[in-house]
Amino acid sequence: MFYEPDKGNHGLPHDPYKSIVVPRPIGWISTVDRAGRVNLAPFSQFNNLGYDPPYVMFAAANFPRSPRPKDSVANVVETCEFVVNMATYELREAVNITGSAVDADVDEATLAGLEMIASTLVKPPRVAASPIHLECRYHCTLALPGRNLEQSHYVVVGRVVGVHIKDDAITADGRIDVLKLRPLARLGYHDYTSVESLFTMPPVGPHLEARQAGLAGKPPPATSS
Image (cartoon, rainbow, N blue to C red; front, side, top):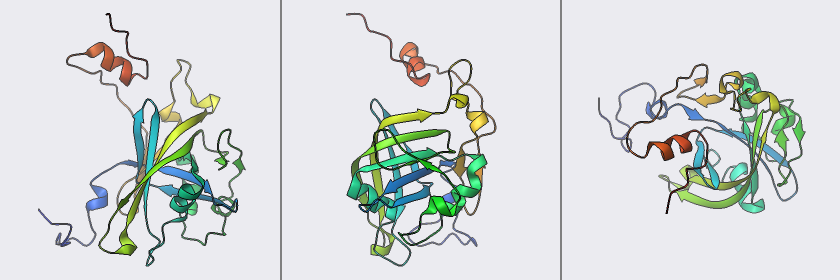
């Protein structure tokens, strides 16, 4: 089949687009507003950008039927800080609750029964039960125009300045135990998945030593002069 997204002529009972770019990792973003109120919300339009230094991005549309950006976006732009909390299978119900469309004065963490703990370098707190946290400082926002003001999207980029990893999330050989943590990812419709299997595939081709080091999370080998 072929269809044009601008025309929506796919002929299916549900728009298939969100099930095409999958799986999408979930950024569980905690922020505070100028009054110090905490906001916690999951975003499936989330990913890593670069490694040295590390950046991350999350994207959000406006509130439904409103030209107003989501609270997470507004808070980051106003206060210039946010935290990414790893969303895991064990915490899936809490993640879902914090995705509720509630007023800005409602604390989603309290709504989901989550304990929040202080960060080290930024003001937004962290989800205590989450095994990994990225403390971030705001870098920039990219505004993506929609068909109208209500459908605008905002891509928020932050630089990672601090990383918290729980000790039991690290294997004996010093790697993140992804299979134990089972990070959540979003599919289309109301569907999710989590990491339950992995396989190893070493790189091939030229410049193997540098590529192997980079993919393994190690500094590149020194070049001879």
